[in-house]
Image (cartoon, rainbow over all chains, first blue to last red; front, top):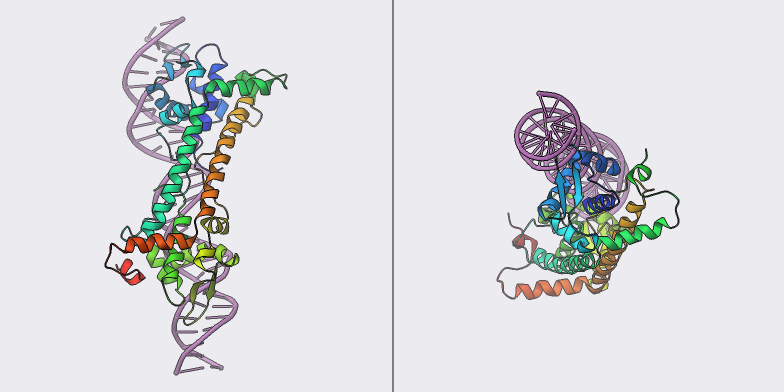
Length: 154
Length: 154
DNA sequence: CACTCATGTAACTTTATCTATTACGTAAGC
DNA sequence: GCTTACGTAATAGATAAAGTTACATGAGTG
């Protein structure tokens, strides 16, 4: 697979949380991503700091959404993850003095910046509530429920 | 640095070739990128197959441009490199059955596709000749020539 | 027709990055 | 106080990119 998939993973996790009643533990969320609980906690750290989720320790603890799904955009999540690079191509910078390198990189940077701005703008247009309704409409053609137990039964 | 920089590297190399009279060897080009000649040959293989450059063996051999700079766009180069991934984020695909995963990934894919199309379209708008004139205009504010020997003296 | 130069490519090694795991600390319930 | 669960640093493992070595092929040179 190509690239960073934290964005996809975090969204997956948040929407699962929305479909559960109480707090969901890192362990349960980790199973839904087939990964380790620590990976989930690391990934959620930024979201907690930005106030999108709460975490509770101890019995009955776990993760809960701190805001309504309609109040969170993909852009919010992207920023909370630390604005990871969206583009997979970079500049060769072996000779900063070289005019050719400067010209090539300037042109590529310009194009890259434009594409990044487009992506972030599109992210800002999508709320988690919209994603959630995407899920519900997919579910119309299904019998199985959306609970973790069903979706990720192994 | 982030990501793949073959595009930047190849453009650098091609424009250097344009500023040299005869064939340029992989060894000379490699020095301009501070890398190994084999890396250059690997990188140029696709361009040769697509007819953008010629390679000659033996004495006085090396690489030459097969077309005018005005006849080559960044998109051409991108395709000749094998259309490497342009975006740095991908999908978590742990549970293809999961409706949430499907919905999240569908939305991200859609946005990614749009951004990729924008990038390729922008690449198609830029010819190597334009990059070359960028270089020349940068050179106006300089005394040093554009030859490899000057630009990459170590 | 040897000799040298330069590409063509496969195989291997090194390096960097990302992911996963382990370990241990803190806090909240029971 | 015992268990549960998060918080986080440190370690280890896996994967992919870059670099290197090795050797074969072909083109010029004397």
